[in-house]
Length: 245
Image (cartoon, rainbow, N blue to C red; front, side, top):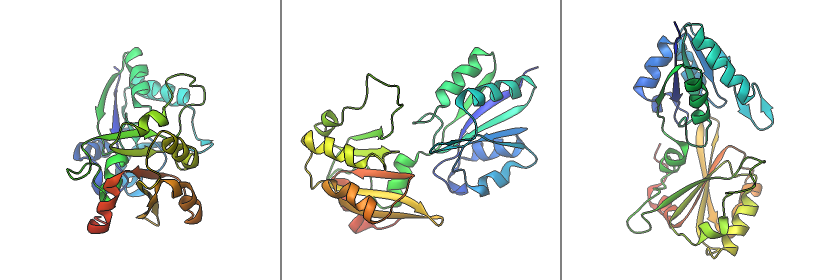
């Protein structure tokens, strides 16, 4: 009899920000296949489960996506309860949907346990609300690092500039100069407030600037990936709110 796979979102990092259901599943799983950037405290909750590191960071891939898909199917066919532990939320700029599709195709039962995405939580903890009735009621969440073989339907940053609202960019640190240039050429005010939030020594670090100086600040402040970029007037609220974690 086949087992079951749970695609669990670990949340933005700290163990107290994972869901109760996700934590309970970790404690009872036979095998946990986990991504990079998962906090060690969370992994410590996995009890006697077999731990498989499937992390991908930069050019260092412990397993290819095909290998991950095959491993999940194989483990479930062995009758095991498997947790596929993913940073943030399983579907938002992750490949959880692809994994779920492969499992469905193989006849494996699969469930998703949503997680708190860093696109929302990281700015909040830095005192930056993504919506605010004095500033905007719209948020766009975009990836700054698209698949290299995508030739169509790529992000049109110039068009995005004309839409207004808050722009949140994940995985965009290395492309910040290009993104800023495109947004400005698309009509976004070069002096639009911007923030970059990274994690250092177990704590968040937030730095603010304006759009035209975004790439220069990332370089000058030596802000390393991964980081969350927020662009929009809501960044002004950090002055009043400060850090909220």
